[in-house]
Image (spheres, rainbow, N blue to C red):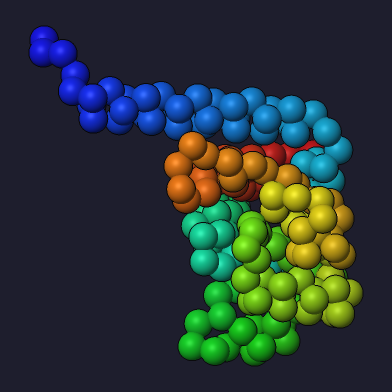
Length: 173
């Protein structure tokens, strides 16, 4: 075997750091599962007439994953996408007996904040999956599920958010 070049060593160090971060994210999710937030979120989703899921930009992958997984077991789930300027029309479907899962991380998109406000104004139960208890999308949400987006790289990581939506989609209270 040939020795690694300095660039090869740097890439290996980056891969190890990312792997460690993923392991830490899963460990944090294990701790979260013991708290009240996750079981409460699952109860809200199960009792809701309809579940709406929203996440834009970097949060879209987590929102789409939750929608896909939850839709395997329940028909009354929709993904709020806001395509072609139709966000306002999608928000009209919100009903007081519905639950809205809002996924977002700093910097928060205007669309995500509009969904959070519309859910509050319509009397829906909101669940925020975000990076801080003081996030603008957490203002009217209960429960708030916090995940880290920290990474040794330039772009924030979605690993913890994706792991959490798998837990939410497959957990029973």
